[in-house]
Length: 431
Image (cartoon, rainbow, N blue to C red; front, side, top):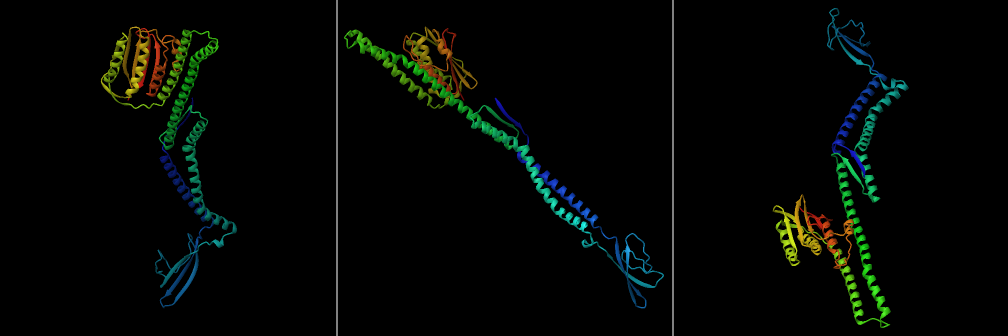
C-alpha cells in the first residue's frame, strides 16, 4: 500500500507569528544599521569644517568701541591678548583696563562646495537611507512568505494534490498522513477520513455488485434444470399426443412433472424477490434485554423440534444486560438457520449464545450429515439449489448471510460440530 506521509509540529498560526516577528526585527535592525552607516558615510563625504569666526567687540573706558573678526581653528592656540574668556563669559584682562565681548560663528560645510563625485555619492547615500528600509521590508515579506510556504504549506499541498489525483483515478489504496498539530494536519486527517469512507463505500458497492453477479450466475445455472425439464416434456408431448401413443396414466404423470417444474420456477422467482427485499431492508436496533429476549425466541423453536421428535438444547451463559439489537432481524436469521438444521438433524439440535466484546455469537449445531463440500468451499456464494430428497432451496442460508452482514456481522458454515453434523456460526454487532 502506498503511504503519503510527512511530519510537522508547530501550528500554522504560531509559525506565521514567529516568522513575522523575526522578519520585522530583522527589517528594523538592518534599517537602523543602514541609516547609521549611510549617515557616517555622508559625514566622510562632506565632513564638518574645523574652523570658526571669532567676533570681538572691545569697549574702552572712554566709551569708544572697536570690533574685530578673526578666523580660528579648533584645537589650535591663537594669540588673542585682549580677553580671557571661559564658557562665553567676559573676563577683564588685568593688563588692559577695558571690557571685551565675543561671539563665535562655526563654519559649516555646504553641498555646493563638494566636488561632482562627492555630490553624487552624497545624493546616493541620502536615497539609500530612504530606499534601503523599503527594500528590506519588501524582501523580508517575500522571504518570509517563501519560507512559510516551503516549510509549512508545500508538503501538505503536495500530499493533498497526490491524494486528489489518486481519487480521480479511482485508486483509493493509499494513506494520507501528515503528523503535527497545525491546521494542514487537521485538513489531511479530514481528507483521510473522507478517503476511508469512500474506500469503505466502494468496497460495499463492489461486494454488493459481486454478490449480485454471483447470484445471477447461480440463478441462471439453477434455472436451466427446470427449464430443460419443461422443454423435454413439452417436446415429448408434441411428438406423442398426435400419434395417440400416450396412455391416460402416462399423460397425467407427464403433466404432473410439468406442474412440478413450473412450481420450482415460481419458487425461484419468489426467492429472487425475497433476496432483493433483504438487501433493501434497513436495520433498526432497539434496546433489548439479554438473555431473556433470546430465550423467548427459542420457545417457538422448542415446540417445532418436539413435533419433529428432536431434542433442542439451548445454552445461554450470558449475564443480564441491555444491548442494541434489531430483534426481528435476529429472529429471522435464527429461524432460517434453525429450519435448515431441522431438515437434516437426526435426533438433536444445539443452540449456543455467547457475548464476545461488542458482538453476539450464535452457534446452531445438528447431528446430521453436515453441509455439502460444495457449499463449504463457496460460502460467499450460497446458490439456490435443490436436493434430490425434498427439493429444498438454500434460501435460508442466503437470507441469513445477507441479514448478518447488514447487522455488522457474518455467517460461517462448517462441519464437525460437537453434535457430529453441521454448524452455523452467526456473528452480529451489538451496541
